[in-house]
Amino acid sequence: MSQTDYIRDCGSRALGARLRRISEAIDLDATRCYALTGLKFEQRWFGTLNQLRLNGRMSVGEIAAALGVTHVSVSQARKSLELKGLIAAASDPRDGRRTLLALTARGEELVARLHPLWQSFEAVAVEIEAEAGGVIAALERLENSLKRQSFEDRVRSRFEEDR
View (cartoon, rainbow, N blue to C red):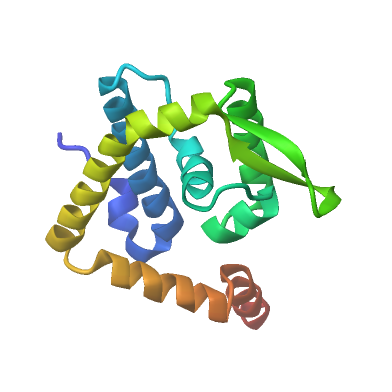
């Protein structure tokens, strides 16, 4: 007996599960690709390290805003990156209440070694986008739709109507 794909069969009713599944598959493949370099690297570190590579010193809040993720998410990555000696935190010289993160020499070395792999990731992403036929544009439309009205607000409204 052939097994059906429940998530696929649910169609739009399983939108979140489908996006998570795709994200997990990409992250797992990326982890395998990092293993090719012989370096220990967690995919969740990429955004923070790349922001620091591109912009220099930044606060957790600035990185979170640039990536469009939660402060908590960046804070968790920060902790593990600091433990690995890849980034360091220091008080902002202009505002001592603020903490800025920066790549350490070890972090800069890691980023330099990973940059060719990241370029391959970018090339493959462009290839997949072309093969998939406009998935980035569809994701943009999805994000814009959720910015106009959140999933939660839509469910609350529908739930209230249906009561």
